[in-house]
Image (cartoon, rainbow over all chains, first blue to last red; front, side, top):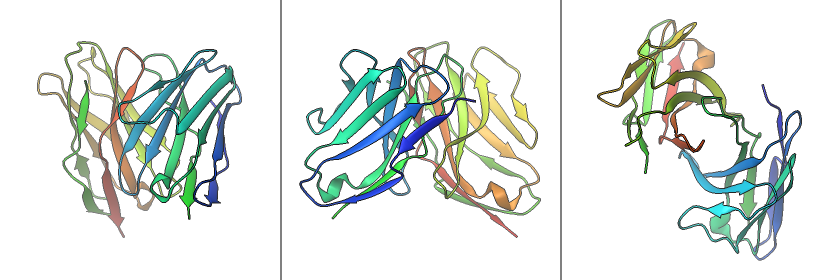
Length: 115
Length: 113
C-alpha cells in the first residue's frame, strides 16, 4: 500500500504561535490531500481538501486563514495552524486522495497540544 | 450530503466470540463504496474491509465480514473469533464518487480475555 509520512507526530506549542504539519507521500504522487481533525473519542472530521497547484477547499466552519494549506508539489502537503489557541488542540491526520474504491491511506497523525 | 451513523459508542465481546458492529448511512447517490477502518491506540488508521455498492455479495476478509443491505442503507461488520488485538475504535466510512470519505462516529470495541 501507499506510504504516507506525517511529521511531527506530536507537538506542544504556546498560544499565539504557529505550527506546521507536513504530510509526504513517499511512493506515489498525490494530486489531492485530505486533512482531517479528530477530537478525543470522536470521528475524523474533514477539514479541507488540497489540490496540487491550486487553492484548497475548506469545509464549512473551518477558517481558511487559520488553517493554511499548501500543496506545492505532488509529494508534499502542509497544514499550518496559525495563532494557535488551546481549542485547536487535537489530532490532525492527512490522507492522500486515491482512486475510487481504493482504500484511503493515512499519515500517522499529529497530536497538537496548545498551552 | 452524506451522513454515516454508528449507534453503538462502545461494545465489548469475550475473546473467541462473535460481535457485530452496526452502521447506517444516508445518500442519494447510487454508486459509492463502503469501508470499515480500525484505529488502535496507536491512532494509525487501518483498513479492515471494503464493499462496492454495486455488488450484492457481502465482502469477507478472514474473520471479518459485512452484511450489506443497500435498500436499508445498512453496512454492519461482523468479527468472528474475536482476538485481543481486535480491541480498537472502528469507523464505518462512505466514499462518494467525488473520492471524499465520510466517517461515522466510531464504535469502541473491547475484547475481554
